[in-house]
Length: 121
Image 1 (cartoon, helix red, strand yellow):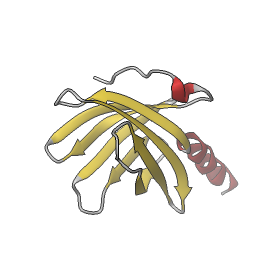
Image 2 (cartoon, rainbow, N blue to C red; image 1 turned 90 degrees about the horizontal axis):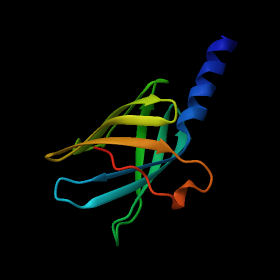
Image 3 (cartoon, helix red, strand yellow; image 1 turned 120 degrees about the horizontal axis):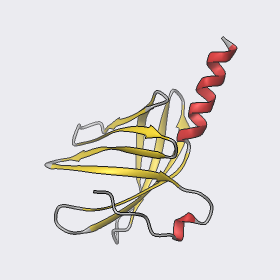
């Protein structure tokens, strides 16, 4: 029982933190997103910040993480993300309306917030 609890704690430490992604949307707009992930009971929550002007931060609740897979679907089903964690990256698919976008989130390290990220393709 103690071993199982220790394994869950290690996974929680891997997902909790600051994650960043950058991509070009189908209309040619560059998008950069920073997600700050925190534990929230049995799930996780994130605050998402983007480079779009006048776009307030978005809070995402109910993120699931089983140590490998990360998933979220918002309450009205209009957007979702399903990805797989590998080391300090989460690669997956974001679906929003008619858009399906492949994204890779990179775990931020100190001083990385000012650095350029590779564009996901």
